[in-house]
Length: 269
Image 1 (cartoon, rainbow, N blue to C red):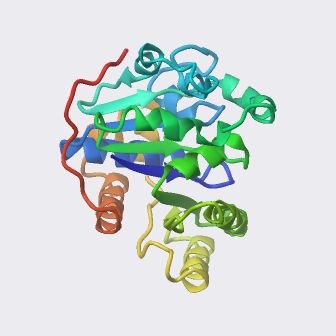
Image 2 (cartoon, helix red, strand yellow):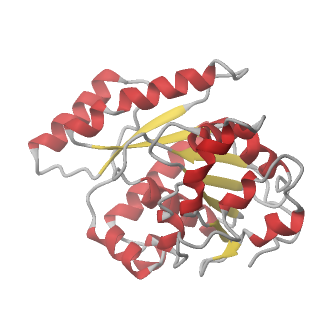
């Protein structure tokens, strides 16, 4: 199993779209992929028609006190999508309550890691859609991951927020044996605007070793896919957006070794 987090401490930069796009592209390659929504806003679950107001059979269940999460509860949180090999654990607004309980529960920062350990042979990839704020949810996502994808909207205010995310990664790295690799991915790029072009150049100049050499363009087909609740690949495999994500996936696979397809049945709801 390979675990990637899509994270940025700013909303509206394309985290959920990136999660879905990478997930469906991996599934199209025959990989078993689990998308995990850890954002209390539940955007990833909403994408596929799951209301964030529902609290059961969601990622919230993964944060049961240590030893209290049973296999049937874990299995029930995993839902099918209309795409073969692509599965989903929706988020819920109840996730926002975990910050208070985290103070009194030891090991809360590793809840997701413990749950994934029990699914290790059943999925090839897990992609975590992370919340935009620093707290127990983001810490869980980063602690469980071996690669972080950081979507960065190509506009000045979004770029200024990158430093907060990188500071968080430095904090996480202090408790890891090996540094957590990350890739800054320029998103919502519009080459017709000077602001977008200047922001892209600034990213490349400031973090040359950690910025993807291309960008995800502004593409209405990505928005259309979201509004229809289908993956960008299912809606239009020739669109500029999904082609850009296919290129990004190739880059990620070069830095994260491929894995053999998972074996064993996947229980789902």
